Length: 319
Image (cartoon, rainbow, N blue to C red; front, side, top):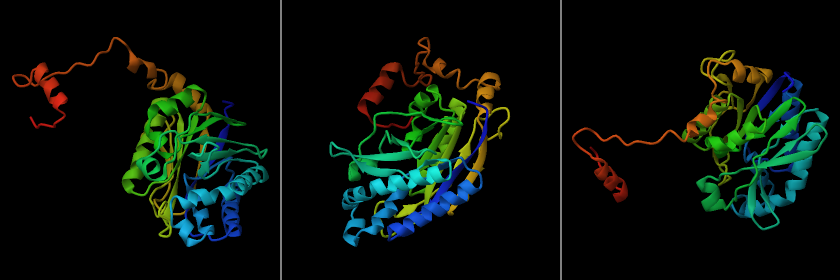
């Protein structure tokens, strides 16, 4: 890291029936202008916020979770170009709303494009699917956990559910990421808190920054994104120089807004080298081969053979 302090903006994106491409382009252009105008160098849009584009099609398309996936492919080149042009014109990096993209083999992935100030782009695919994505949408997982080089340093993307699995982020952090951004789309408070809890845990164990960006609002016309619950968050290690709860900033839940925060990336290296604890450095110690699991039965009741029997039966029994 080069020690710069950067401003990150996380969108609490208000989904709506957008109706036309012109309205959509005006909406996201105004949002980018607002955040970039406040000095944001990295802008993060949420997971599946692109699905409001389904409202450009007839009701029998936007009301069908499968038909809309096919129809949306016609808009992908224009969608990607829009965000790359905005990144170039505002001299910033943009993690665009994730998009359900059809691949050459006929499968769909949940893909977040990373657009750079020179209008080039790359992407991160979601790696672990939720039940809805697997069972109803048939979205398939990606294969690569990428780390993106930027002029301010390196960052990674964990799309929503991915943030709840520590080994994914760990691979990216070990490859140089000091910042992880988490585009999210959750339809319950429980879903929101699952992602937030996972994100805070990733910041703790990796001693890195984590930024979440949710979809908010109601879209009764869409079976896919009809209800959206969430608030953006910026989380840090719980150590010297950071808040005692690791929370740098949070947005107002379910309100349309940008959440901006200034992040000192050099502070990550300092806390890993001189912190109260060494979570990042001590990661491998949990896999110490000298540590073995031991089952301790309640005295005078269960013996190991009985414990094995309970597990083998697969039946929960109250002691």
